[in-house]
Amino acid sequence: MTTTYKIAVIAGDGIGPEVIDQGIKVLHKVAELDGSFQFDFTHFPWGCEYYAETGHMMAEDGIEQLKQFDAIYLGAVGFPGVPDHISLWDLLLIIRKSFDQYVNIRPVKLLKGAHCPLANVNREDVDMLFIRENTEGEYSGAGDWLYKGQENEVVLQNAVFSRKGTERIIRYAFETAKKQGRSLTSISKANALNYSMVFWDQVFEEVSAEYPEVETASYLVDAAAMLMITDPKRFEVVVTSNLFGDILTDIGAALAGGIGLAAGANVNPEREFPSMFEPVHGSAPDIAGKGIGNPLASVWSASQMLDYLGHDNYGKLVIDAIEDLLMENTTLTPDMKGTASTSEVGDRLVRII
Ligand code: NAI
Ligand code: MG
Image (cartoon, rainbow, N blue to C red):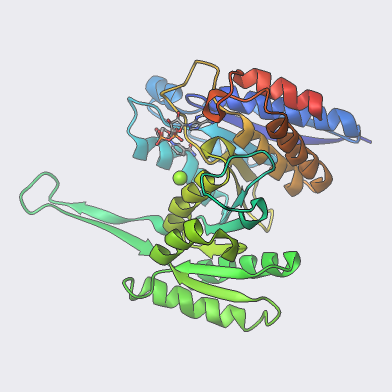
């Protein structure tokens, strides 16, 4: 019997649809190779164009519509003309929060053939797995804007660290490190953030006591930013807050071959709701419509989807195909100093697979 995975596709804005198409090609190819499962993609036209027509980033019952899917595959949202805080909050962040996708998994791994800007670094030294808190912290959306436009204007942007939220992300990271037999590094900032990050560090210590077999380290975020550049091999599995994870994984993207290669999964580990897979990059309006966006980040996130669906053998196959493509160095997009188009890269990957 064939299993059918129902995938909701929100290709979104800018290069989103161009790069997502390549991931879809790859997923179809993998399913064809296996024969025991197939993908059924449903496309949702949500994003900034939809906003221009309707005044909403997604359908009003969008969350309800998405609930029935096995997973969500997202390109990017955001385009000049719609304020970024609207496009981000009214689609991406709403999905992450409504579906309790509290784990954001972002691999920072230097693949064979990918370019690292650091001198004298071994490929194996850049192999981190970031586990970023994804539903609260600095991106909780709690705050206020008082006396707007007046002389006494005040804005408040609160960070929210609940015990439940902090414990579960740290525990997830310990479980991952234990499973992988690797160390776990916590990144915080308890010297300056004297409530939230003191609490974070305390919870990290508490949960750590349950995992004596996992080697741990703990850094302040500013030092961690430096150490990622000067000594990347220190970092194996990493757990950090929403904001810090957002920033540090862009450094990670630069270390591991560029933003065109950086992928992320937004996971609800309990599988009560669908998880969402997306490239880390945005809609790249500067190159949108030219057919030159690098699809490798999207394809990598498709491989994370395969892992999540229980087909990690194919997840690995897709990563191997990306490595082969990087190594042959003939079919790459301009951001990787190549001359190929987005769809040529997708087609080449399908052939390699
Ligand atoms: P961006 O990631 O879209 O672009 C930054 C730079 O990297 C640009 O020069 C772009 O051309 C390049 N780039 C990004 N992805 C690329 C790819 N796959 N291939 C080749 N080059 C690539 O970030 P930016 O410019 O800060 O934001 C643009 C829009 O995207 C904004 O509206 C922003 O809010 C939105 N955005 C959305 C995200 C999401 O939906 N998850 C994440 C980040 C930004
Ligand atoms: Mg980001």
